[in-house]
View 1 (cartoon, rainbow, N blue to C red):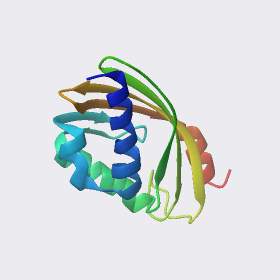
View 2: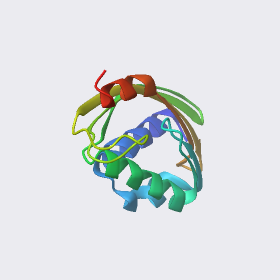
View 3: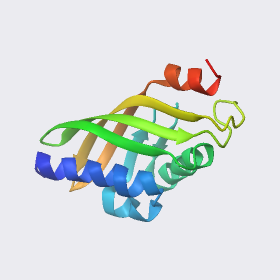
View 4: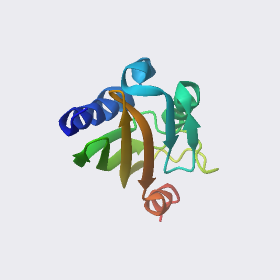
Length: 136
């Protein structure tokens, strides 16, 4: 797959799947054995585990959204710089809902195989997120 097609796939992953919590797109965008490591300390393999992670985020931040700031891609790899936003409406990190708006930076490294995303490794500014959740 070309780097341009992979950039398009990343855009769909965030704009269509994550920003709408549309797990129906998982088979279209992700390899069946997707390997995912999220910045919130969660890991997942396969559609089932990844779908549960999506639900976990949706419960904590029902309006969670991802904004892709930039993507650098070559061959079967890509790196995306992101901004995450949402409102804290469900428990996360043992912190009950604060109803605070949050915004923090993140980055994700993607690997592709067979025209789909096969691996995602995410690193987010968890310190910044915790400060917002704790009112700091």
